[in-house]
Image (cartoon, rainbow over all chains, first blue to last red; front, side, top):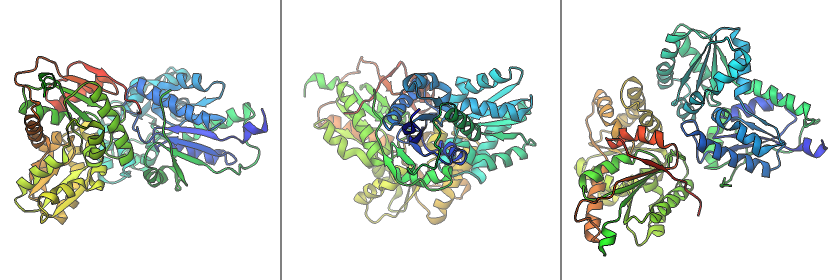
Length: 277
Length: 277
C-alpha cells in the first residue's frame, strides 16, 4: 500500500452527533490519524426508522465519504451497523468498513463472564436483533435480554443527561428490564448513550443492581487499529491534516451539541447535502 | 371554477403524524371533502432542524402534493408554517396554501380576552417567533411568553401521553413558564401536542393555574372552509373518493402510531419518496 493511502483520513459516519463518542475513542487510540466525520443531522434520528430507509441514507453517506478519499469507514451508529453493514460493505469494497455492533458484543461477552447480558438500544437496533446474534456468535450459552429506549436519544440531544427527568425516563425503561433479569453487563447499544452513563449507573443502583456498563467505542477503536495494521494503512507519524466535520443540517447546532459527545468543540463544521444515487 | 376542481382532494402536509390532529378537525368541519395526507416520516422531526432544511423539505412535499392534483394545501405543521409559508405560497401559486400559525393565533387572541398568552412549541417555531408576530398583528397590546418543549414530540410519538414521565417532562418545561407569567390562554403550538392536552391540563392545575388550552386544528378548519367557499372549490356532495395516506418511511409504523392522532386507523398507507428539485 502506498504512503498516499496511509495519509488519507478515516471516515466516520453517524445519523447525528452520537458517533462523536466513537470518534473520541478513535482519536485516543490512534493519535496519528485524522478523521472526516459525517453526521446526517438533517434526517436524524435513524433509530425509529425502517431498515430500508436507514440503508438508503447510509449508502448515500458512504458514497459522500468515498468521494472525500477516506481509507476506511467506521459506521459509528448502532442502528446503521445493525441493519445496513452488508449493503455498505458492497458499496465501499475493497475499502474496509467497521461497524460498532461486533466490537460492542465482544466487550459485553468479556465483561459478563458467562452471565446474562442486557442490551439497551434504539427501536431499530433492538428489533433487528443484531446484538443478540453477535453475542451468540461469540458465546451461544449466554442469556441476552433487550430493551428499546426511544427517549434516550432526544434526552441526550437536549443535554438532559442528568437530573429528575432523565432518571425518571431511565427508571421507566430499566425497572421492567431488571425485574426480569439480573444482568452482569449492560450494553449501551447506541452511540448517544455513553453521555448518559453516570445517570444510568445511579438509576440502576437505586434498583439494587450494578452491572458493568459496556459501550462499543473502545473496542471499535481496537478493531480499527488492528485493521489498519493488517492492511498497512496506519499513519507512521502524526498527520498534519485537520479533522473535518460535515453535517447535513445547521452547523451551529452541530458545533454546540457536538461538544457534549466529543469532549471538545468540533472546529469548522461544513454543511453538505446528501443526494440519491 | 370547474366541477373537476371541486372534486379534487385537499392536500395536507406534515413532518410526520402530528398533522393528523388537523386532518381530524378538517374531516369533522368538511365532511364532503376527501384528503391526501403526506407525512415526511423518513426525515422527522423538523422542529429541531434549521429553517433552510425545513423549507427545502417542505417544497419537495408541496411539489409531491401538486403532482397528485390537490386543490388546496394545508401545512399541518407549526414548524413549517413558521418558517416556510412564503416559499410554499410561491411554489404552489395560484393554488391556496393555509398554515396553522395564523389560525392558532386567532384562537388564542379570542380565548385570552386581552390577557397574557403563553405559547409552547418546538425549538424551530419558538426561535422563529411566528406566533409572537401573528398574535401581535391581531392584538399588539397582548403580552406573549414562549417556551420550547423539544421532548414533547418524542413523548407523543412514543405514545407516552400520560403517566409519570409525561408529567415530569411537562413540569420541567411549564414550571419556569408559569413562574414568570399567569397566561389566560396556552397555545399548543405543535400539531403533536393536542394528544398531550389532558396530561398538560393536570400538570398545569398542579402548578395552580388553569389557562384555556388552544390548538390550531378547529380554527384552521374554519379558515379552509372559508377559502373553499370564496374560491368556489368546496364539494357539493360527499366525495366518493377515499382518503389517501402517504409516508416517506415505514407505513406499518404510520398506521400504528397514526391512529393515536387521527382517532381511527389510517387505511392503506402508501410509501413515497421525496426528491430534490
